[in-house]
Length: 149
Image (tube, rainbow, N blue to C red; front, top):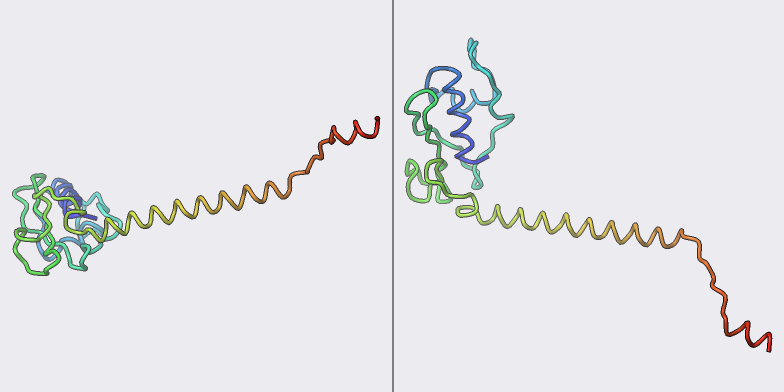
């Protein structure tokens, strides 16, 4: 989950409801129907997560229903700059790897581990097949010549 994906889901929510979300109901209204909300077409997310540093995402504004919504997290320094400074925002266009190199590194490590496991399984399978395969003994032509001669 990123600030941009939360903003997009919030834009869908505002389009469906015809209203901009209130701080008290956001972001829970993205995962569960608010009481009495007959307009709700969610869930817009199955579950909510925090940013890579364990901070909650925050809704800054939605200009109007269906318009751009601004969502941000307070970033690594945990200082609320309302989307400025090191805050990660939906409108700045920064990738997660820019602000969370640890998250990118962890994804790369996970990919390398999966590849290593796949190679290991492949080696085990090949060895197993080789052990089970019947061995054919080829006749030794030089021995046959000495017996005949």
